Amino acid sequence: MVENIKKRAESRREVPILDLSKQHESIRSELDRVYKDVMDRDDFIMGKELEVFEANYSGFCETEHCVGVGSGTDALHLALRAAGVGEGDQVITVPFTFTATAETIMEVGAEPVFVDIDPDTYCMDIDQLEEKLDDRTRAVIPVHMYGLPANMSRIQELTEDTGTVVIEDACQAHGALWKEKTVGGWGDLGCFSFYPAKNLGALGDAGAVVTPHENLAQNVRRLRDHGREGKYTHVIKGCNSRLDNLQAGFLNVKLKHITRWNELRRERATTYLEALEPVEQLKLPMEPDEAYHVYHQFTVLCNQRDALKKHLETVGIDSAIHYPTPLHLQPAYHDLPYEEGDFPVSERVSDQVLSIPCFPEMTDDQQQYVIDSIQEFFVE
Ligand SMILES: *Cc1c(COP(=O)(O)O)cnc(C)c1O
Image 1: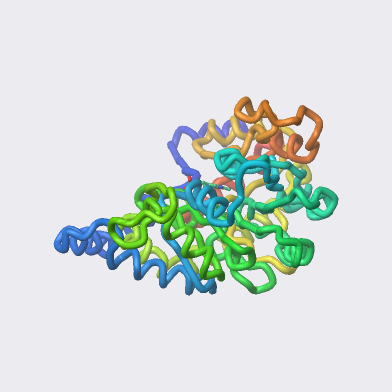
Image 2: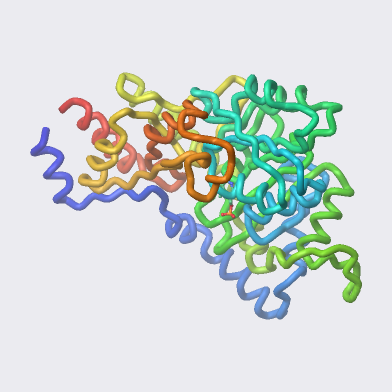
């Protein structure tokens, strides 16, 4: 067995966690055309491509409005501001997420209130949300972790008629569905990142907020462009967080392929689920009946996580840890009233998660090599 692994490592087979160059190769001429069009017209900010993208993306999410912004982080920040969340408000979210989710709550002067995650879905534990919801809760931010939607129908039931704003952190879940409805469209506001490595990625930073509410869309639209109404009137203090035309144009090209790319991710996931099911030492991702998971990451739990990661590295396979430290244990949040032990599921999961390569352009051969290499690790 060891011989076997060595031989393979020697043959220098390598599987990256994501291979964007392959994706871009397949659509290179379309991307080049966008660059040429925008250059030829000298039209870089708040122009045609952005308008087309906003129409396309609100259609994709089946929401009335879409406002392009500078990043996923800005999408969360501007969504909170647009909804009037600020000083003295509490916002419930999870500690098992990317830092931007809580960072932006602090940024607007509000207080993040954490609830733990569900041990099977890694999304918000809705029973804990129910316990924590009270008059001080201004907003709830569920995170659709790894591309799997949080239980949006229960969140909707719990927050209906309470005045609590629901802001979805859908930065990892473009095109994911909960009860056949696209994420981003469940809440009052849905926030997306088009960071290059996301399921739908620009060629730089980009993001968007979607919403069914005209007034919230208008607030975000003003905030992202210096509170402008017309060229010289600034009705509120905003910022500069516009989605530029080049990125919007690239996104228009990629948006045509996202449904197929998500399907390909799901096919890879199905293959992993079948092949790795017999490996008792691994806990595999699950998909509730109501959900359509888009596998931004295919993430397994393993209590020998670090050793498994190291083994994969040795044989040329890239893997990643999203995320090794829950936010309540990060230095940036030490002012919050939390300590180790407060969110046992998030803490345990952070020690055990490992994301393995699962992307649309991955070959059968590459995937089989990942599967063999994982099996070999546990046989030894
Ligand atoms: C990527 C991501 C963000 C931030 O998006 P950026 O575009 O990188 O600012 C926020 N939340 C989650 C869950 C993310 O995965």
